[in-house]
Image: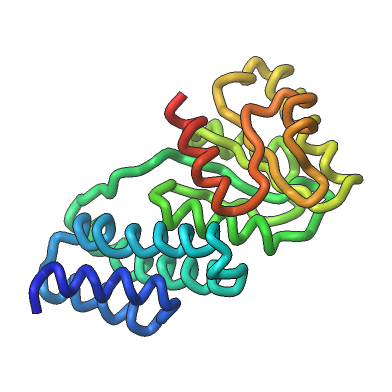
Length: 216
């Protein structure tokens, strides 16, 4: 099998959401001592980008998106120890701290955003749901993160996004970390009003928005 054929199989495994195949190919890449960076960038990442295109065009829906993101995540977990052992660093798109704000236990949308960001090369630390505001700031400071992503599904908890930005200003940290907000009741006007750096309507637009913010 040629290298090109192998990378095509990797991409197909992600596009079709075949987790077993995605994991087996990751193991094969390791055992055959392939260039893991090439396998990731020319196989897995191309696959997740194709999934994004299909989703944008209405051919794929949320279940397919979640399945493919989970396939990507599973394959990366297999390769991660080998990458670390060989001191190979994959090209990081940026460091992100993500979570659902305090008082809100909803995390399905946030989990999807986290998976898609990870699949697109970001180093993501997911703090979970019902996260205290100072925890976001502490973790971002510890990691020297580029971006804090705040999710809220309830109108009663979306004010936590505003309070976090106010807390950053109080601590003299406003501007050090970019802040992106999202969630069902959140819109661009809200993001503008509270001084957020970015807003994302869904998981795939989050990738483009995050890349723009990190590049700034």
